[in-house]
Each structure stands twice: as C-alpha cells, then as structure tokens.
Image 1 (cartoon, rainbow, N blue to C red):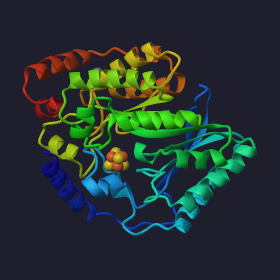
Image 2 (image 1 turned 90 degrees about the horizontal axis):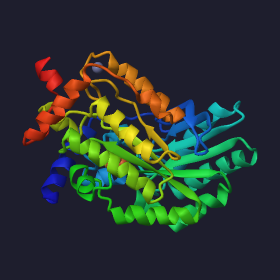
Image 3 (image 1 turned 135 degrees about the horizontal axis):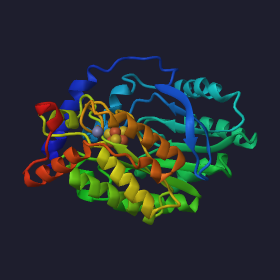
Image 4 (image 1 turned 60 degrees about the horizontal axis):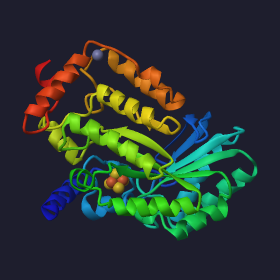
Length: 362
Ligand code: SF4
Ligand SMILES: [Zn+2]
C-alpha cells in the first residue's frame, strides 16, 4: 500500500509546490510576541520565530504527512547560513526591551536537520541565545524537530551554549498508535524512535513537548477522542515534559483536504477537544497540557455546529485553559452538545467516517 500511497502524496505535493512563491530570504516566515506558560507554570512573554528554510526533508522525500502543508510556506530557492543569521537577528530585535522572555524557534520542519538549518547557522543562534541566558533575560527556549535528528551530538552542542535554562524540543508524535501515525498520518516515525529520543534528551536535561494531533484522517470522531486521550496519558507516562494538542485543520494541498472536499472527513468537534483536555488534565494534574486554537472555529478547523454561539466561547475557554491550566474554565454547556452526541452515535453505525453533516444539511 505504501508505495502507491506515497506516489499519490508525492504527486499531489508536487502539483501544489508549483504554486509556491519566492519571499525575502532574510526575513522569517513570521515572528510574534505572546503570553505563554513556562514549564514552572509561571506566565510571561514568549517570542516565536518561524524561520524560512527550504522545508521539511520528509515532505520532499515521501510526500509528507497527510494533514501538513508547511512545505508551501518554505522557500523554493536555497536558504544560506547568512540568510538564516539575518532572519534570527531581525526577529530577536523584537525582545530587546523585555526583561524576561522565552524564545521559540520553529522552521515548519526540523530545526536540528542540517538540510534545513546548517550547523553554522544553528550554532550562531545558540550562541546568541546563550548570551541572553547569561544576561538573565532568557527564561527558556523551544525548538522543533523530528526524532531522528535528536542525537547525542546535537544535544551536546545545544547544552554547550545553553547551560542551565529549560530547553524543550517539540516533536510531532501525533499519536502513540503506530498504525494511525504511520498509515493515516504517514509520519514515517516509529514509537521506538520517539522513546529513544526521549531517553537521549533526559541525559541532557532537555524536555520533549509532545505535539498530538486530534482527529487524523480515516478515523471516527469517537476513535479520535479515545486516541488523543490515550496518547496524552502515554506521553506523560514515558517522560514528555508537556503535551500540546493540535486539533486538525484542513490545509490546502493535503490529502486531508482531498477527503474533506469529498465530504469524507470532518475536523474535530470542539466538544471532543473539551473532553480530551478534561480527561488528560485530570489524570495528570501537575503537568502542562496545552491546546492550539488556530483554525477554530472555521469550517476547515475544529468547530461545533457552524454558527453556533458556543464556538467562540469554547475557543476562548481553551486559550484560557492553556494559560491557567484550570480545568473548570472548560465547563461550558450548549444545546448543540446533543447534536455532537448523536453525530458520534450515527457515525459508529456507519462504515466510513462522516463528513461535515453541518455543511450538507444545515
Ligand atoms: S508534519 Fe512535520 S514531519 Fe510531517 S510533513 Fe509536516 S513538517 Fe514534515
Ligand atoms: Zn453550541
């Protein structure tokens, strides 16, 4: 199956990549400051930098993951070490007047992959961050990487510059169900590789933030809930430093969009997300459970009945929950909850996952 599947994914990816545009190689894709929760549960400012690189190696090689369109934001032309240094310098200027902050550096791929960020650029960035640590301004740093690049050598290198503060690596674990991860999501990552990466980071006192996808393709709403709860609990059991749930959003040029446009996929209900967060947080009360809210509540993102007034209420509640870790803020009621319950019941009797019944019958 995988060969045909990969062939299809690659062709689809290639078709969309033709639409990719050139942008300034010296400017990051995006950079912003926001309120954030640190590992010690205090709240402060964080600077997020999304570096512009050539993009994820896995997406080029294999067509990539079935819900991911990050490659579209990457650069069609090579990005040099010099370009990356300038991107970082441009972004770090934004925090020059802050006394305390954290820095999150993402690439929409793997920061630790040489293919995206050459060693010299990476060391330049860590050196500058090390200086900010010495000045007492840097609270913690976060990067993202696939597990195969989380090696002893890379971690030793990081800890050579960033001596004491929390360092966290966000890893797209997506789920602890290997079949879902490698068939439905097409991640190409074994659970064994994830466990090895976690064990390696522990030696260097580096944390792993588990990104878990809520509702991949090809599974029902009910299975998506069970899978996310199980994965959240398992992530903490095996030593992840925090869990960040990512409710699926239908991005352009992905296999997810292909099925969504045929009404064979529906992004998760917000009720499902609330159930997942309550469940995982109550079982792991001293741990940080977060949830991304981008895409909520559009028809391509997680939503309850479209246009129901509870959509924004729940979105705000999820954002509040991420910052405060207070489970009570998720206690919201709305009459459309019955609709969600009956959707799940009906889908369980069906033979394929349901699309957005909202769209077809409303
Ligand atoms: S989800 Fe991550 S690993 Fe998968 S294609 Fe996108 S950037 Fe690459
Ligand atoms: Zn509602």
